Structures are given as C-alpha cells and as structure tokens.
Amino acid sequence: MGRKEGAVVITEQIVERLKSIMGSEKRILLEKADLVSYSYDGSFGAYIPEIILQPVSTEETAGIVKLANELKIPVYPRGRGTSLSGGPLPVHGGMVLDYSRWTQKLIIDPEDTVAIVSPGVITADIDREAQRHGLMYPPDPSSSHVSTIGGNLAENAGGPRGLKYGVTKDYVLGLEIVTPEGDIIRTGGRTVKNVTGYDLTKLIVGSEGTLGIITEAILRLIPRPQATQTMMVIFDDIIDAGKAISAVLTSGILPSKMEIMDQASIQAVEEFQPIGLPTDVDAIILIELDGHPIAIRDESEQVKQVCLEVGAREAIIARDEESAGNLWKARKLVSPAIVRKKPTKISEDATIPRSKIPEMFRRLQEIKAKYEIDLVVFGHAGDGNLHPNIITDKQDKEEMKRVEKAVEEIFTAAIELGGTLSGEHGIGTMKAPFMEMELGEAGLDMMKRMKKAWDPNNIMNPGKIFPETKGQRLVLVHD
Image (cartoon, rainbow, N blue to C red; front, side):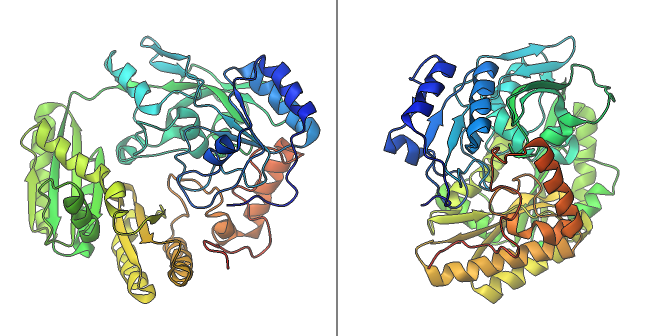
C-alpha cells in the first residue's frame, strides 16, 4: 500500500472550502479507516487518498473540480470499486469522489425508450425498471448487481450479452459532464440519430474518468425478447470448443450469449457449490438464444447439430427456466470459486478475433506450462473476450515474478493474434505499460495530446491509461 511521490496535502483551509461547496461535512471523510477503505478496488495494488468526498449533485461536483483544478489536486472519480484494472485507484493521493450515494434519478421513459440516470444508480436496477415496461437495458457485466452505471460508463463495460447486443457505449445517447476545469457540458441528447459535430459522448464513454466526470446519462432501451433458451455443450478438447464457436456464428444464428468455462473453472465451481456440471471434460460452452419461442426452439436444434458436427461430446438443452438458471449461476460462480485455492486473483480480458480463439487457447496452455502457474480460462467466447485468470498468492514473491512474465505474454499473444489489451475491463493501471505495444508510439501520443487538451493540469484520474515512464513494466510485487 502506498502513494506516488508529490501528493498534495489537504490543509484545513482546503477542507473548509470543500465544506462550503458541499454545504455539509457529513459527506467529507478524513478518518484513516475511511481513507484505507477507498485505497483499493477489484484489481491489484492500494494507494491512500488524502480525502474522500461524496457528491450528490452536478453543482457540488463542478465546485469541487474547480477547486481541485485551481490547486492542482488529483481527482479520482469512483463508483462501487469493482474495477478490475485499477480504474479508481488514487495513485497520486488527492481526492476520491465517491458517487455511490448519488442514486436519486432513475427515470424510464417508455415513449422515447430511454432511461435517465444518476451516476450512482446500480446497473442491474436500470434493467429491472425497464422490464416493467417490456424494455431491456442490455449491458450486463458480471458485477451489474453491485456496480454503478457511472463506473460502467467510464470503463465501457460489457458482459455476456455483448455478443448480440454490444457494450455500454452502444446504449449511450447523451451525457452530462463536469470537465476537468469545472465546466458543465451536455453531449448528445434523447434522439437515436445525432451527428452534430464531434461525438463527444463516445469519447467520454470508456475514457476511465481521465477526461471528465459523468453526472447524468441518457441511455437507450430496446424491446425485451419474448423468450430465451439455454444449452450446455460439452467438449473433450478445448480447441474443438473454439472451432464450435466459429461454426455456430457462421451458421446464420446469432446467440445472445456464448460463454466458455475450462476444466479448472468447472471443477472449482463444483467444489465450491455443486450444480451438476461434468468435471471429466476439457471445456463447456453455455449458449443462450432469445427471440420468438417457436424460432428459438428451431434454432436450438440447429446449434446443437452444428456443435456435434465439430466434435462436441454432447449438447444438452435446458428443460426449463430453473435448469437454465442453474447453468448461468455456475458461470457467475467461477470468480468466487477459483479464489478458494489461493487468495490472489489477477483477472485479465485480452480479446482476440473469433477466428483466433483456438490458437489463443493453445497459447494460453503453453504459457500455463511454461511459467508453472494456476491459469483458469473462462469468458465471453462468442465475441473473443476471454478472461484468463491467474490464481496466486501475492506473498509468494517468486511465483509473482513468474505471474508478471505470464501476464506480459498473454497480452503479447492477444496483440500478435490481431486482438486488443481489453475488451471490457479497461486499461487503468494494470495495462498502461502495454499501451504502446498495441497503439504504437504515434497512436499513444495522439491520445496523450487529447488528454492534455481536455485536462491541461492533469488532475483528472492521473496515472491511468498512459504509462508514466518510457519503458514502464508491469510490477505486481515490490522487492
């Protein structure tokens, strides 16, 4: 646990000015226990902030940011801290702005098919409210029951339904933003079509809080499908599972979900909370189809046949909603199940073209053997968004050094296969050292110039996305 050198010290005078801006000291936290509580997220590493603020209005946010910009104090926006890439970590100290208490606005407009939301609203609650009107908010990250929409917007979160429905950015029509200089601007609006000038909405979504703070969002909703059908396809060879994914997606059928679990993740789930998954297999794929009940019954049989033709041992169609629910429960249990073996989990989401999935599986098996690590693979196979998870113990420095090298090779493999560093987790601190590998020097420089134009004093979530030194390397353990 630490803090970068040069962190600004929050004086009593600064605290008094913040009290004036917020009109209360109840949402200003300075106790050591509070500072420690906000020093980490769902990734790796911890950094102590100077102060925690809990804004609940745009005006409060603008006032805080204007003060921070004047005094050049780093500002770190934060939702529920579920980021897996270090997105909200206060690596330069400064202020953490906790938006989890700002939940007042969740409006569903069925006529315009939009939702208007405050940044602290829980993502799953948006879909739940939309369902009352026969609508759906498709993005469904695994953390949707605890993560905030503000955090999802900042990281451009995805989820299993991304295969058919896309990710967060595909459902954002408009935003209200506080800029790094404390100005309030609106981008986009309530219309599906909007080509007025630069698309600042898309620029902000996925910028990880480095260009501004989202204080309100207008989200597109779509009609909810009439029915769903789930199946489990069993494979004796994970390479064949990769081939099946491509075969299904070129068969003329587009599932809403295609999730893969390797043998290690299957066994971990069965040991953690037995559901009845087969443990003598190399991999399973969970497939969900949605649409008209008659259509998806026919499509299920077609998908089953396609999988059997490419080497599946068996394809089992769920009998009812309860059976389907158990299968998807198994997929959600992977993360808590795998950490029972060792306490430290490093979750990556390197993404490759679907055609390269079999090759990526082969490369991951080689990396696992080469570095003698516990590597578990699961994820959103339909869109190539795999989640290689390394299970380790950060107290074992020798193993952690091997893990660092393995992570580097995983990213290198993804990029060599035409993929990307991240499909949905974001860059944050974890992947910043590898940005030039994917973007090239000129591409990375262009992003830095955009950051400089928006945030000349570099107060907005500094230390994220961009490597802070030339040749910076991933370091998970310090000697």
